[in-house]
Amino acid sequence: RTRARRRDWAMAQSLSRRVARALVALAALAACDYGTMTSWVRAVRASEDARGGVLVAIGDVHGDPDAARRALMLAGVVDDDGAWWRGVRGGEGGDVGAPMTVVQTGDLVDRGDGSVAAVDMFERLKIHARDAGDELVCLIGNHELMVLQHDLRFVSREELAALGRESLATTTDESSGTGLGLRAYYYAGVLSWKKMFARGEERGEVLRNKPVAVIRGRGRCATAFAHAGLLPTHFADHDAPGVDDLNARMRELIDVDVVGHSTDALIGNDGPVWTRELSQGAEAVACAYAENVTQRLGVRRIVVGHTVTKSGQIETRCNGLIHMIDVGMSVMYGGTPSAWMCDEDEGPVAISSTGARTPLES
Image 1 (cartoon, helix red, strand yellow):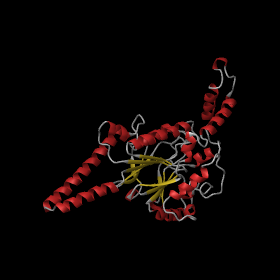
Image 2 (cartoon, helix red, strand yellow):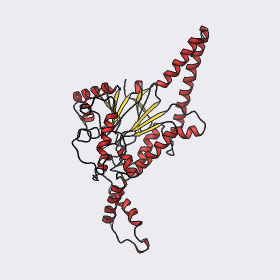
Image 3 (tube, one colour):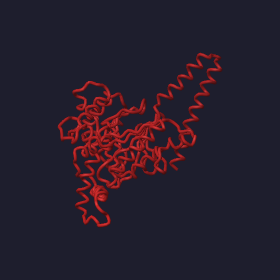
Image 4 (cartoon, one colour):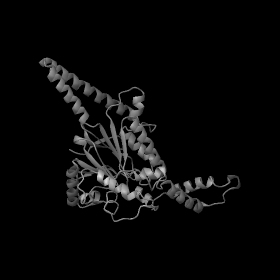
């Protein structure tokens, strides 16, 4: 059904573009003005380019790559086999529709027992997205930061034990048996985990290169994304426009062997990976913050994860200035996958686990 919906949407988009072009051409021909026809056709093409394609976001995954895959399927990002949809469709010679940008708002890791699998899955999908002319962006969340701080309180013990068992199996003679128990496997797994995400290791560099915030979409879909939120204080001492400066500062802070527990505004308790002001703060305060930041960044809204919504569904605050997309999809929370989507025609919508689409702004 996901393939069928995605195919129908692509066909509708293609047909609407062809109809628009035909009407422009007919109107210009009727006026017998070749110059006007040329300028109108250019205007139609410029309008199509300004849409910026389709924007999709999913929230916290927490070690459950299967839930993430199902969330991506809801938005037609991947097919039933978990392959990038536009890449598969394009390879078959079909109409692949508008380009797609997908943002995962952080916290791929911890809690569930598939943290490493989740990180690896999204890195593979990044390559597939690029090959299809799309983009997949994964933000840093507080749990990625905790990994870099060697804070393992929320890492699945089962995943650590499995890593340790795998590690010890390569250093012992299986025929004679290891004679080791779960405690030995766990501590060997802790060492494997720290090495896996160390500075200079592939997965360690993946986490260190995640942006703290991005701006994507145009027009009706112009949106800022951060794991927990963006506050005026995050920009207080920096006049640079956009979020590039934030990302450069975060990169500088975490490009070390072990990240400390700094009081810096970016990684402290009120930083963009930890704050709960936008999702749980007093309404008047949260709305004032959101209005300040959206105006500064020139966007319509801020989309955040981090805090599981009370309803288990995507929610908004402050007349749509804040969109909260952490629905607790991980099996560890018992939630169900959802996806956030925006295109210029429909605006932002929430897609539930049943495929129902709910407009998020009037």
